[in-house]
Length: 593
Image 1 (cartoon, rainbow, N blue to C red):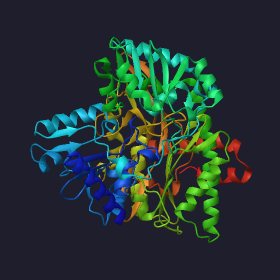
Image 2: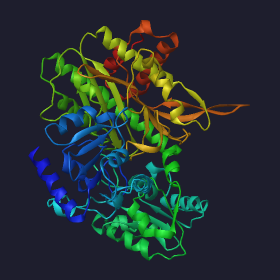
Image 3: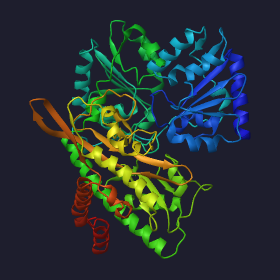
Image 4: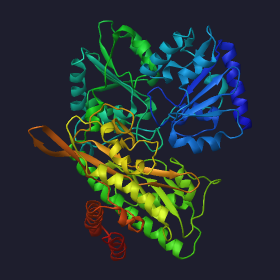
């Protein structure tokens, strides 16, 4: 709390020197990433809140405020307690947007400071339009961090390595040619790529620059001047340099990208995606910029046959690791050992790391026991680490990065005799999960149009959840991937064959328990009729649901059949890779209900 107060005071001193009346500190980097390297964790540094989403707004006078979404309401409230920072619960009725709050708070003639390299083209443009209507100016060159963050972590220096084509399925040269062809459809003859996962996918390169996300800090330019990777030279081994040369890629220093953009021929037309490009980059390109959706996003999201086969194999190995993890957990609890939430995370990481092609976890394991399960993105630490008992619910959301695929799974596990409320809540969530898993929908359907399938049974009982139902998942890349998602607010990207998306409805009773049931699903063709082409989902995740928690009296025959068929499929896929003890354990867990 003392550090937060000191840091906010230092920020306000810089604001005064710059003539700024309010500062916006987003959770962002120059690549518009969701998950950030330490170098760009400015909002965490200033506020103490370490969630992956949220924006800090600091006025010259009055308390600072932090906007975040429902995943972090409970966590943010705890981490901001005792500071001046007030929590703004984004998306709830009565919570103004940042733009609305600024216009209501600041008088005409004042200035809002932002760093144009930390705000996307679309976001800054919308902010400027709203503030201009109230005679509030934006200063886009406000970067106070150099003065107030003396021990700021350096830019990531992790070495880059090549993601072998036997896993990626396609050569980088082919992907680059197709990206340029996509740019030409928008009247551009070049492409500039900011998003780190798009850079990694495009060039078949990976690194460890961002925790859990195997990406490298870099930009890419494709155009008549050549294909250029803007990256620190320290990150390149001789092998990687030779690989890039063979793919027709040269390199320039990471920090030279704006100078390159400003010096580029005025005849050049460069496609930039306004959603993933920093406004500061757009300013550098100026009239050369052509704003259009990235031609890389959809090809990256629609996995090829090699990638899909790899993910299926990764799911088997992940399922085997989960079987051994839950077996160990049960044995230790039965023996009367003290097992904590952090122990659960350690068991999962250890068992996964024993599997072939393991690279890392795909995100920090969420192991929330009892009331902690209601904190949607909870991650135990030494202060919160709860000891498990032989009662209540344990929510485990975890995943891994394998060279051939990324996994993400959530299971809610009963540690004792389930109560009626636990069974009822779990079954309502699973009824929605099954409804989405079995959906058939016409070509062109967006996730928004399917979201209510997963919520309908909760809604009938006056229950709901505030997070999205599904997010895209990368291939040995970010566990959160666009452009598709399944959520209440409209996201126009259609669910297309090859896309891997999560199916994860939930229910959270604050102070009681949390329930979430998540599998990854692949969009595949279903059939064609005179009314067009129809798609469906193929479930990829391989681990049983806890059958003790199903209130079968609440379920239809079709739902019971789905659960039994799914668990039987899990047993058939995983048993050949298990020893006799593990196979017997899995047989018990997948017995028909």
